Length: 339
Image 1: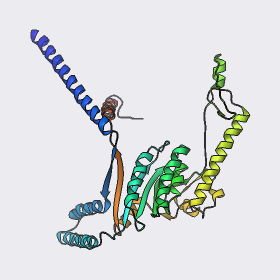
Image 2: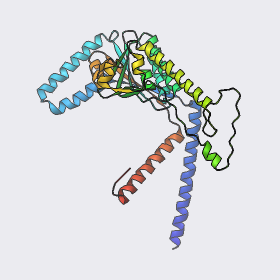
Image 3: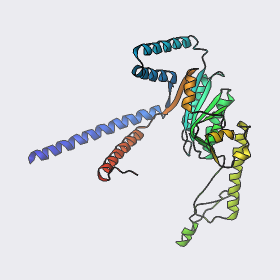
Image 4: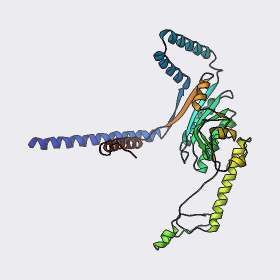
């Protein structure tokens, strides 16, 4: 059994060497990241080329040889014709905003808008594929302000809603010169909501005192642990009404044709109903609209990508491995039922 002891010692040494190498590589990468900062990069894809490539692949499979050659020749002629007027050809810049409750995509949006405004002309167009059910007032207020920059620059702004633009999402959408919605997209929810639990009675039940000191009559209105008062509730409600009034005024400024009192009830409308309420201008999916624009202009999709830190990459990889292990274990011992 002496060989087993030698083998164990060898494996321990090898593992130690690997750990040391990994730590050195991680340290070097961390130093490089500190020097570069947490900068991101702008990625640009021309949708005209992407659509042409997919059409070529499909055509090669479904068309006969003669028809495929004719299609290929016609596309090449069209490209040459457009190339002659490249400088004057209209350009469409496509941005995508998928909003969470904190409007986390805001950081990408602000960089994308800044880049577009450096080159965009009045003959161009900015299309935003927007999807958000709303969230924090201040976050979505700033996100909406990024789209206001496009309007103020005199660049036509089109908002495409395939799924949902509600509350803060609609605050952003209403800025568009045109709003296009898919037939079952949800629009509206022009209202304000706030909710929080209160544990004061639970604390009293267990003889736990809670103290909160403030300076200013309304520094704190409703709390999680203190005893809330009618005065505090009334003030909190007044604050919500103030935000709602500002929200309504903002939407009215950009959508004057709306009957704001009729739609600012917190309700949402689907597709055709949203069109009838003038929350949208046309029923059309973003895919349909962009395919049309590809035939008329040069269409560029922009994405600002943030460089991930080393620890984030390692954490993401570890989480991915754990997820796969968990699914494998569940499939073996729980008859592949996942909840």
